[in-house]
Every structure is written in structure tokens, then in C-alpha cells.
Length: 357
Image (cartoon, rainbow, N blue to C red):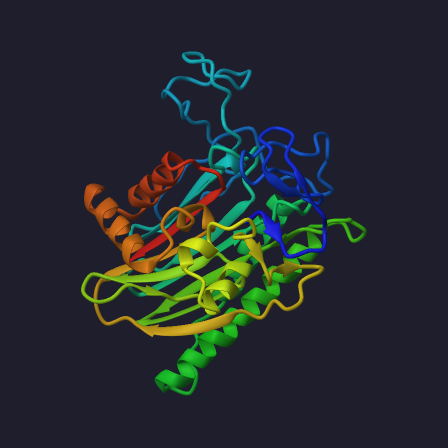
């Protein structure tokens, strides 16, 4: 996510001539840095080593294990450059993966055009396939400072709350859905607090991010969002479902009758109307509940993916075909979907979190 709804004046990117806001740090069109030398006010959650992923454990962007060159597979030297092709090694925050169980996985990637990765994710799952999964994605607003730090802190804070316990309610399906929804709202509160804790109180552009979370517990799927990161349910048999509704200028235009294609390709297509952060008008997620009675794919993603394939039906086809090509393996499928988005232009950070039910 790159532009929040503000009163700043539009100007022009010196690199490509695209429209930008005076508050933006990076150009939406080409990813050029608009304010070189702007230092973050919070420490980056980075190391100089590449993360690895082990099933049953979560590997985030601080994981300390060296990896091969992502461009050619060669050895990365002590100077941080590949000894074979000379490519500079990616920072761990630029690309990381998580796979807490064989049936749940996610990939978070910087994309091609941006100079840093402001997306973040945090996922968890029980070992038994289809039992319990928690998928959280936060997309930092690039016109705000420290959004890469804040988004990661927010996603992890939300996951911690969601992991705290199973919501039973009063034993009925409706009360269980209400209990899960309440826990999801508490997770959004924790995520909001984490954003506030990871931005300077006197920052002219305080850190902010979107929020989306999906909770699967024994056949019940509850999703909630703030901003325009999304959750989808793609059953193997049945109609694909968009579980969330964007808080965005584009969504408001669509509600008035403007076509989705026109609204999502306009100059303010990525302007959001709600977010997490110091200047947020309201961060209570709108939730929806879906009963899961058969196999399918749960997808939680940032706009770096859906911007190239927005509607539920074609996106479901893309996920199913990609999964078929990867033998139904969630991590390989998520990675391939990130590669696909990069092949479309990679103009934004990309996060894909999947659960195979």
C-alpha cells in the first residue's frame, strides 16, 4: 500500500513523471526514492543474512542462516555480493518465508520497483491439516516513516493475540463466530499498539499500515480487515469468495457503480480510507464468517498480488493452476504466485499467505 488519504498536494516524480504526493517517500509507478537520505526513526528489523524456512518453525527476516544468490544460485561472498554473477545479496527483510506446518505457508517479497519491503506477515498453524490456521498480513503505507518496521511488529503482535487460545463461545456456531471475531478485533488493537510503539511520536508522517487476518478453526473461517489487504476463500467445488471489502477510494467508487477495472486503475486507486497508525480514524476491522465444508485454498495477500488479478474468480483460477503446477505444496505455490506478480511488473511489495484446507 502506497498512498493514504491525506490532504497533501500532488506533485511529479523526477524519475518517471508519475503523480506522487508530497508526503510520499517512494514513487508508486517506478519505485524511485523521492527523499534520499531520509533516515528511519526506529531500528530496522534486519540482519545481513538470508532467512531459511523449516517446516514446524517460523523463520522471519532476522533468521541467521546464509543462503545462495537469489539471481543465479551462486555463493554470496563476505562482501555481500555474489561471487558468480556479482549481484548484491538481498536483505533478509526484502524476502522472507514462513511455513509453520506443511499445509500453511507464506512468502513476503520486496518486488521489483520498490527499494524496501514494507509488507509483512505472521502466520501460525496446528499440525493437523485443516484444523487451525492464523494468517496475518500488514502492508506499510510508503508515505509514512518506519512503515517497514511497524508493519512487521503489527503482524507479529496480532499473531500473538490470535495464538493465545481457541474461542469456544457458548458452544453454538454463532457464539463461536462472535468469540473468534472478538479475538480478531483484539488482535487488531494489538497490531495498532505495535504500530504506535514503532514510530516517533513527533514524526511528520507517523508509521501506518493495513491489516488483514484470517482465522480458521475446525471448519469456521473468520476474516477481518482494515485497509485494502485481502482474504479470499477458493473452494475446490463452489464459487470463489472475497472475504473482505477494501477500505479504499476505489472501493467507494465501485459502490457507486464505477467499474472495478476503472476504479482500481485510476490515479487514486491505492488510496486507503482506514489504516492502523497514530492518525488512523478507526482501526476496528470489519469481519465476515464463512463455513468451510470441503477442500479449498485460503489466501491472504497484499495488493502487490491482487492488483494484477483482483476479482475472486480469475484469482482463484490463478491459485488453482499455480498449485497444480507445484503439486499442491503451499510454500512452492506461494513462492510461484510472488514470482508471477513480479513478472507482471512487481510494482509493489508482494505478500502471499496460503492454507490448503
